[in-house]
Length: 294
Image (cartoon, rainbow, N blue to C red; front, side, top):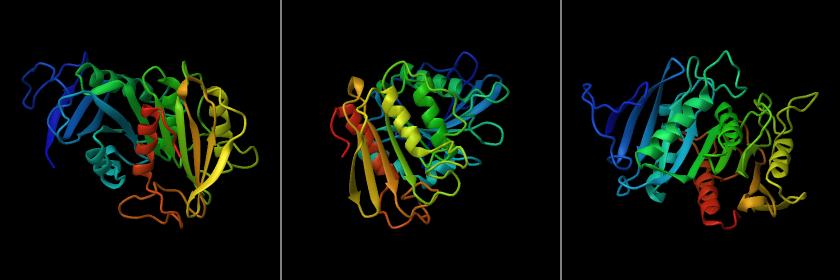
C-alpha cells in the first residue's frame, strides 16, 4: 500500500519527505495511506490517514479510529476492517497512536499526554486542508480506545458529531459536559471479562447500561429504550426522541467477550455475526442522513 509522509510540527508546518516545504494540499491527497507526524505538548505523535479511492480531493467524512491499550494505529488499521469499509463507503479514516506506553489518557490526568488536544489538533489540520468535513467527524475505538472515543464525544462535541465505542472502558472517564447533543453507539459483549458489561463490583463503575442512560440524559432522549433483537445473539436498545436529531443506541452481543467483532484475524466473539466496522459506519452514515439506526 502506498504511504506518503506528512510532517505536522510546531505551528503545523507541512513538509515533504526530505524537508522541503510545500503548500497545504487541497483535500486529503492521493489515495492510500499518509503518515502524519506531530509534536503536541512537547511529545512526538503519529497518525496514519487512510484515503479512499476516487474521492481524495474533496472534503470527506472522517472517522477517528482508536486502538486498545498497548496497541498502535497501524495494528488497529490492519485488523479492524475499517480500511475496506472506508474504500467501499468513501470516508477517510485516521488511526492515531497513543503516546508512551500506548495507553490513552481517558481520565485526562494532568501528568499524562494531552490526547484530547492531540486529536483536536489533528481534526483541525485535516479540516483546514480540505480533507475532512467538520459536519461529519466521528470517533470509534476498542477497549481503552473505546473509552477515548467516549471522552472525545464529551470533550470535543464542537468538532465530533457521533461516537461509537466498542468494548469500551468507562470507569475512569471524567464528568461529561458536551456543548451540543452527540450521537452514541456502544457495542459490547455480555461476557466481557476485561471491562464487564455490568461494570466492576461492588460499585459497578464502568457499567454499560449506566453509560448509555447517562448519554440518553445528556442528549435529552426519551426515558425508555426500545429494545429488539437485530440478529442472532444480538440485541439493540435505542433511546427515542433525542434533542438535535441525536441518537443513542446500545448493541449487546450475547456470549461475546472483549474484542472488536469481525476483526481480522477473527477473535472469539461469540455467536453473533455482527461486524463492528460495517456497523459503526452504518451508524455514522445514518446520523449524517438523519435516518433510523435500526
